[in-house]
Amino acid sequence: MGIKLNASFDVMSPVPLDSRTVLTKAEMLSIDDTCMPPIYYAVCSEDGTMYIYNKSNDVNEETGKFRPISTGGSGGGTGEPINISNIYSKTEVDELIKTKTDSITKLDERVQSVESAISEPPVYPENKNKVSLDTTIDKVVNKKGDSIESAILSLSITKGIPVISKIALYVNNVLVKDDFEINLEEGISTYTVDYTHTEAITADTTFEFRVYDSVEINYASIDVIFVEPSYFGAVESVDTETIDVPATLTETLLKDKSFNWENITESNKIFCYAYPASLGDITSIKDENSFNMLYFFNKASVMIGETSYNLYYSSSTASLENGRLIFD
Image: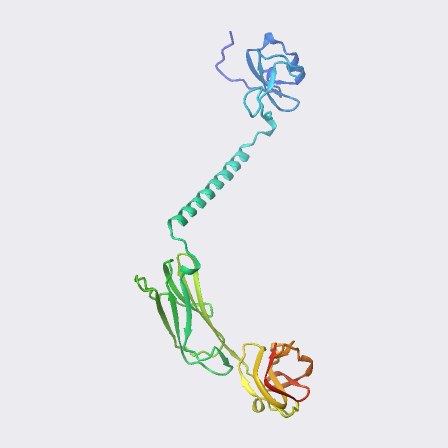
C-alpha cells in the first residue's frame, strides 16, 4: 500500500523523482519485472524518445518490454517515434495556431468571393459600362501663345450591367466636380453628362472623367496641348543664313517631330521641314516606297524668334508627283 501524502515533493536535485522514468536502452532491457507495474512509461536518456512498458510484451533484444510511443498510437504503433526534444514550445504552438487561423480566414474570404461572383451576373466586356468624351474645343493641338476661352465637355455613357455609383471630373489630375447626376432610369441605355469649363486654357491641360461602378473605374480623357509650330514646304533654293522660315514655309501644329507629308506634286524643288530642336533629331525620312531618304537631306540650325529649330532640306532639287515624305 502506497504512502499517503498531503503535500507535493520539492525536488532539489537534477534527477527524476522516479528513476524508472528516465532510462537508457540497456536499463530498459535489464529492468526487474518484479519492480514494475503492469503498464509504465520512460524517456530514453540517449535519444529523448518516449517509451511505454507493458509487462505482457515480449522481450526484444534492445529495450526489453519497452516500446517507443509513435504518432500512430501507443507503444508499438507504426508511425514516427515521439521525441520529447521535438515537442513545440508554447510560443511555437501559438504561432502555428495563428498561421492556421489566418489560412482559414483567407479560405473564408475566397469562399465569400466565389459566392458573391455566383450570386451576381457575370460582367463581360460587351456588357460593361462604356464611356467616351467629346468637346467643343476645335483643336487639341494649339499654338503656344494662343488661348482657348472656354470649353464644353460632353461625356457619353452607355450603361452596362454594373451599377454606376459616382462620376467625377479631374483637370490636370485635380478633382473639380464629383456630384454629377447619375441616370439610373431603366430603359435608358445611353445618356450624356455635360460640363462647361469657363477658365481660359493657355497651357497643356488634361480633362479626365472617371466613372465609378461596382466592378471598375472607367476613364475618358482629352489632352489639350500647346506647341511651337513646325513648318514644311518646297522652295527653289535654301540659304540657311538668311531663310525666313515662317514666311517661306507652311505652318503646321504637331504633337512631336514626326511628320507625314502627303500628296506632294512639285518640279525641281528643294523639300524642307523645320521643327523645334528641343524635340531631337530625325532618324528616318522615307518616301512613298519606304526608301530611306535621310542621307539625301541636309540638316541646319535656324532661329525663329527665341526658339532654335532643326531644318532638314534636300541636298538637291527633285521632282515628285503625288509623292510622300515621312519624317520620323
